[in-house]
Picture 1 (spheres, rainbow, N blue to C red):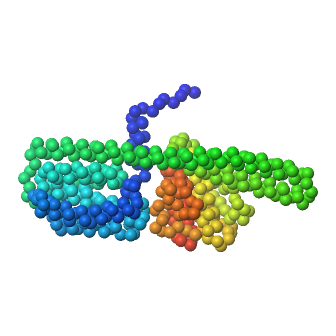
Picture 2: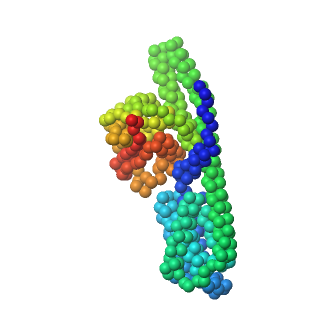
Picture 3: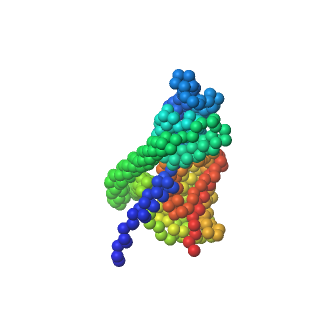
Amino acid sequence: MAAAPPPSAWQQTSRWLREEVCIAPLVPVLHPSPVRMKGLGLFTLLGHPLFWWVWAVGLPQPYENLPLRIFTASLGLLLISSRVSSDPASRLAGQVFSAVFWFELPFLFSWLFLCNGGNGVWLASVSAMILIYYFATDWRIATVGLAMGGLLARILFEWFGPAVPPMSTELFLTNAAVLGFCVSMGLLLGISSANLRREHLAHTLTTMGIMAHELRTPLATMSLIGDALRGEAVECGAQSARRLEQLGVRMHALVRNMNHQIDTQIANARLMRLPGHTEAIDAADIVKETVSGYPYRSTRERDCVRVEVLQDFRFKCSQSLFAQVIDNLIKNSLRSLAAAGTGTRLGDLLIEVSAQGSRGRIVVTDRGVGIDAQLQPRIFEPFFSTNLGTGHGLGLAFCQRVVQGGNGSIRVRSEPGHGAVFTIEMPVLA
């Protein structure tokens, strides 16, 4: 069979753009920490009144606006507030940070730049603002924010701005060249920084995978010891033989469970480099096979899982990776049921397979402890876990990447104390 031709330059560029623009997760606050958030809030609160004094009194410029400066400074209180600064990686903190920085950087600076006729002071100020904006937030947010902030400032300037002599052609071209250079450098640094962050994450995940793989050697030794125990049981008395047989069986069960955990960690370690190949998958078959092969800790745990196939469907995805998705959801549900402490019953973990029109659905429902509403928007983020004791926060991020790789979606609905419902939707093959 002839080898597939290498991808063209256009295909490579399209794949890169899709990865950078559409697939890579947005990071509204770069390098988030409570100290950083409070520091930026404090600088906003104190900096704007200070710069009003500099440009209105110390080194007067044609235009300044004290009420606008005071309003912008007050936005710094939002960043300093404990609800935002205590968890700067949260969805709320990202939204507040993005709104505050959009107003005080691209909008406010563009407004003051236009009101001051694009003079040298404000050309330098806007140039610094552009680089700061790209340094503080995701390059996609910064790019869209600059365009929207500049456009809105221009519209409001035409309606409400002071009378300012129009820029000369030479001044306009000079400003355009300097600002264009700043935007291009901001884009370059923003994209390269995002790539570097993902490479660091990929290296970390690879190290985890290697460590998990290395655990197989002592586990193989444990398995041999289990075989030896069962062999020795033949030459002992009935009571000792039964005891040794039980120890051997328990050791083999432990080895199987540990190998299952290693498989999970190795799969999660491929989070940033999931294979792109897909194949036709029967939803009912893959669910049943995964449920049957799961290494339950007890018969009671196995019996609490029920599978209902209302309507089977086929979809395209990586079979091995999608099986790991179902495996991860089962593991999380069983852990939630155990944390509830009420004992498991038949149907406490229900997996339903159904289809409607062009969308197939796999729904995993448990009666466990549930997930707090404030945490639900973050559970698919890498390294975020609701289980602070043992969770590494990669399982659901892995699930989302695999499902999205098959052009599907995954979402959660939950209420504390009333379990959780994870819904996977995939496009049905005709």
